[in-house]
Length: 194
Image (tube, rainbow, N blue to C red; front, side, top):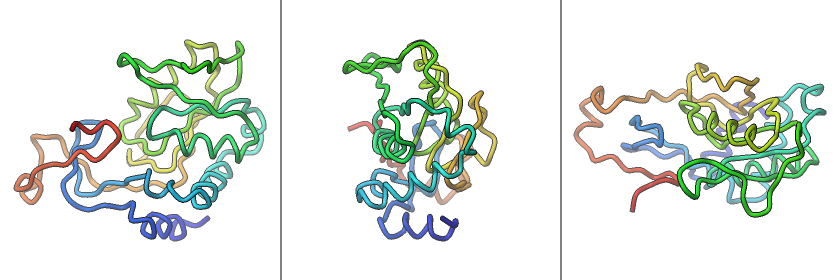
C-alpha cells in the first residue's frame, strides 16, 4: 500500500479532522486522526492491518506469538494485526490508571509479543503498554502502529513499524499559534472528558 492509498483510506472514512484539538499527549494540533473511523469498516481495517504487517521484516514477523494493544484505540487494529499475522490478539486496559491484562488474558513466560497502537505521538501510552506486557511475562520484540505522529522521534525501546508517518505540527499549551489560541480545543480521542 502506497502513502497516497493510505491517505485515501483516511479521507474516504472522514478520519482526518481539522480544527483545534487537544491530544492525549497534552499537546495541541490543528489536525486529528480519528482512527476509529478508518477502522469501522472491517474490510478497510483488514487492508490496513495487512499493509502494516508487511512493514515488519519477515524474520521478525515469524517470531511474533501474540499481539497486544492498549485499549481502547488499539483494540481494533490489534485484533486485525492478530488476524494478519495468524496469532492471538489481546489488549491491556487501565481500570485503575495503569495498564494491565484482564478478562482472562494471560501470557506464557517469554511469549514474543508485537505491541500495536492506532496512533503514536509521544510514545507514552506505548511505553506504558510495553511495561505492562513485560510485567505479565511477555517479551515485546517490536511495536507497530497505523500512524506515527512523532516526526520519527519516538523511542519505544523496541523496533517500531508504523504504516505511515503524518507529521502535522503539535504545540505545547503555551506555544499555540494565534489561530488555535483563538478557538476552544476539542478532545476527540478515547480519553476525552465529558
